[in-house]
Amino acid sequence: MRRSIVPLSLLLAAAAVLWALAVAGPATATSPAPHINCMVSGPQPLTCCPLPTGAKASRLQPVCCGNPTTCCLNAPCCATTTCCTGSTCCPTPQSGTCCTPTPCPTGGLTIAASPNPSSAGQKVVISGGIMGSPVAGAQVVLWRELANQSSFQQVAQTATNSAGKYSFTLKRGSVMADQAWYVTSNGMRSSTVSQQVTALVALAASTRSTVVGQTVVLHGHVTPAHAGQVVLVEVRHAGSWRVMARPRLSHGSTYSLSHRFAKPGAVVFRVVLPGDSLNARSTSPAVTVTVKQ
Image 1 (cartoon, rainbow, N blue to C red):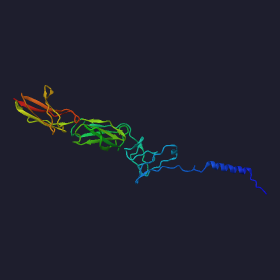
Image 2: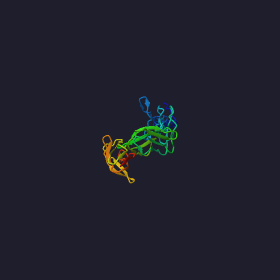
Image 3: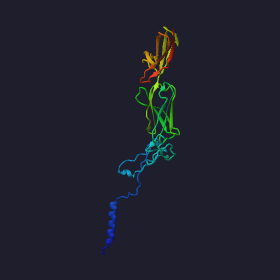
Image 4: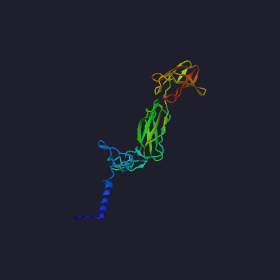
């Protein structure tokens, strides 16, 4: 019987191949890295899914959503001028692609009220601008806290002009009592302005000319209403004001006082509403009554 002889070199080569296959296992090195798909809510896709953390996260790649107002995580974009990501924002998204990032405004957001103090019902203008790097078209929101309230409420919004300025006009009759204002824009908040508002204190006399011993009625009202509060009826004497009476306002915020003059002369009156939580100290126009002998 003949035996076939296999060269030793061939046996060694085959063994090496088998050992290499056993160690390597199934080939996966050429498989592409998996991607993360965006979540979908109804017909509109949401923003790109965030990448998970951990050792396996390095093989995952973010994928842009179909929504033209969103984009890949490595290219911060936004849909409006009020949206900023990091130090950039996109005022105008481009269809199908990410918009071109522009620098977010830096500096401060200013605010001023004019006039301040104001009279009840007077027109008030709240204005200011974005300092440093002004942005045209930035949304500015006005917040207000009324007297006797403990929180601010959004009351209006507008957009900055080409110079980064804004303005709110509060029409006549809308600012009747003390209040506070501030504005917000692009993640910034202005300082708070305290708006002082004086009440309208009316004063009239039943006659502007009388004689000694005759009774004159002083009367008037206060706007806005301060029912139950005391007002000060003052008379001018020797260059200063002296309190003559302290009538209390009625439910209709009115008052009335009768006075008889003991000697002739020109007598000057005014009425003062002391300051409270609703209005600042308020004074009526002066009224002169001429008393004859």
